[in-house]
Length: 69
Image (cartoon, rainbow, N blue to C red; front, side):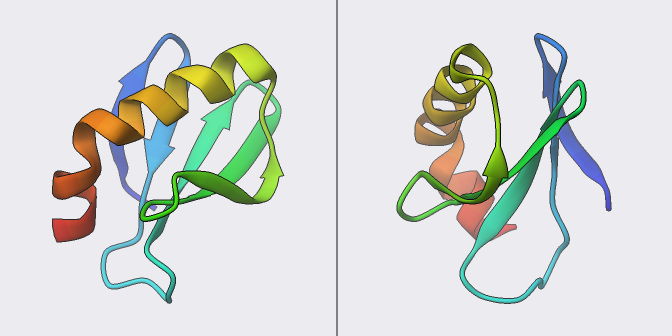
């Protein structure tokens, strides 16, 4: 799975043409969560609150690009 972004120790990975709903994987240390791009919410897994807040904010900024991917 390609890494499309990396910030503050958080890796954002995404399969291109993956299964619905549009989503990406956020990995932070031993934690992993699947984030629904359209709803900007966790649909599977867990991230510590601080990391999740950064991922949610990052998603809001990059939503258009993520949906295009």
